[in-house]
Amino acid sequence: MQKDFRELTAVERQLIENEHAHLEQFLWELHEACCEFDSLKECHGCDKEKFASCQGRLISFEYVFIDFVIRHFENEEKIMSEICYTQNAKEFFHMHVQEHEKLLLEMESLMHKLSAESEQGFTAGAIRELYYRVAELFGKHASTFDNLLLNHHESGKK
Ligand SMILES: [Fe+2]
Image (cartoon, rainbow, N blue to C red):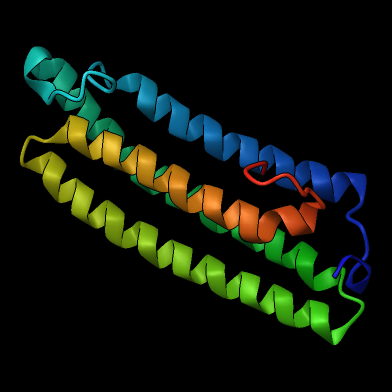
């Protein structure tokens, strides 16, 4: 598979790696916003203002994150379309693009469900679920698809 497409240039690699780091940072900031993240409790220990701020933060995270992910996928896909030598590579990258579409749909439905839970008062649980689920979805995607593009062979590395 490696000789089916050219190596990324330093600029292309840097762009993808920076965006991956940015996605992780986004997710980590949401984790950090919740006081009860590790306690596995709900929001009863937090006052009204803090609760409202976490609710708002979750909603804005959902929009900003999805927006960023869409742009990131477009960048990755543009790079992929420019580096194929063979039909084999084109097919693999086509699968990668389809996987992006699936990921986006999954994220949108997850966010829809979690917004509703947060509105019912379960914001800490919604933040936890979002954090773990997004980390899982993106981790799996990276080890199956992005690592090959970036020429990383260790699993789990983005
Ligand atoms: Fe990807």
